[in-house]
Amino acid sequence: MENNTLQKKYGLMTAICMVVGIVIGSGVFFKAQNILVTTHGNMTIGIVAWLIGGAIMLFNILAFAQLAQKYSKVNGLTDYAEATVGSRYSYFVGWFMAFIYALTISSILAWLTARYTITFICSVNPDFALHIAAENSGAVFGPETMALTGLFLCLSFAVNALSPKLAGKLQVSTTVIKLIPLLLMAVIGTIYGVTHASAVQPDVSVLAHNFAVGAGENNTIFSAVVATAFAYEGWIMATSINAELKNAKRNLPIALIVGAVIIVAVYVLYFIGVAGGAGVEELQKDGATVAFVHVFGPVVGNILNLFVAVSCFGTLNGLMLGCTRSMYALAARGNGPSPHVFTQVDNATNMPTNSGVAALLITALWAVYFYGASLAPKSWFGLFSFDTSELPIITLYAMYIPIYIAFMKKAKDLHPFKRFVLPALAIISSAVIIFFAVYAHGYTPYITAKANGTFSCPVLFYLITFAVIMFLSIFFAKGLKNKTEGSARE
Image (cartoon, rainbow, N blue to C red):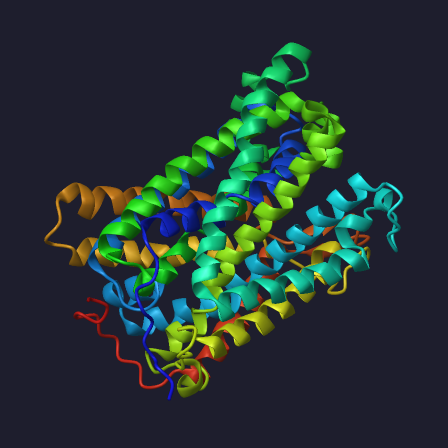
């Protein structure tokens, strides 16, 4: 007979490592290159972008820390939405998490793990034959990389489904591993840049100009901040284990805040180190890999590249740890497709295995879309292509705002600073990142050179996709009552 209750099995250290491990390990490597390209190699603008992105994350984490101290049930974000706004809103938030947000990011993480693995193999063995040569971006979209993407997706699911405790230990160990190359590059890369004069020189006047203009072809700071959104995202998935976290109302807020401080510090220092480790043109073309090789030499540099691949897998593991519980969070409230199927928890592993299988399949579909829209030499979806690494994240920030507003109305027992100031800062920061994203991705149709004069509007096409997926949720809503009284309290 199946048991439908998740047990308390994770401690504070696992929670902190989940926050740090989910966020750090992919975006900092993936987006550092994008930010350098966006800012035309200007390190000052890049650092400011990282700081703004970090502040946005931190303000939201501080607000969610207050929510975590008051509410706990089966899956962080859906609990908070239910307890503040109501069960209807909670259902739609849970649906978004189960079918779009976590799964789009996980699909990209699997690809990044595969990409850096192939890059490491080719750097160790230059004669390693790829179907598409490495110099032709074979490590980016070649069949070997995409096959490994599928393998890593299945592997991360297997670890979480078969042994949740092992998944927790893996999260701790990979978090430690991923901090090694980041901290080494932060310290030694900066020293290398000073002694070799390769660091990108700051230009405060350019920074001021981009803040002043902020639109059209001159939206450098906007685009750079939006690029950091992917690098800073994922922390919300740590709240998905609140039902399995020992003393969750104490440990989860601590994990969120401590993790956020570590993340911002490591990111900024790493970015400075990378800028010191290689010239801007090299970084724009080849990414952070070239900086590792310059600073540490080909042998040690390549070993550190392997650390990057391991850290990406650690991030994927943390995300999958949350993904496998997404359908369960809906089913535990009697909603979503076949609740009786997805509420089942395996007696041997204490894992919602059916929920995990569904997450794996949907993530695989998003991986196919990501390849066709962003990686394939010729887009499979034409103008109906959008960036799945950023736009779903921005949507989630929009979904936070009603939660914050409702929390300010309901949390009458809290000090005014916690009740009003922290949520207000979170609302403002969420609105800022949404505004930046609209400008960065195109808020009105524009003519694209690649499409030979045809119209494109990525934000619009994403919103259409979002609307269709969310509309489907209506057919699986079962007797929702918009109640909040004690619904998510322990």
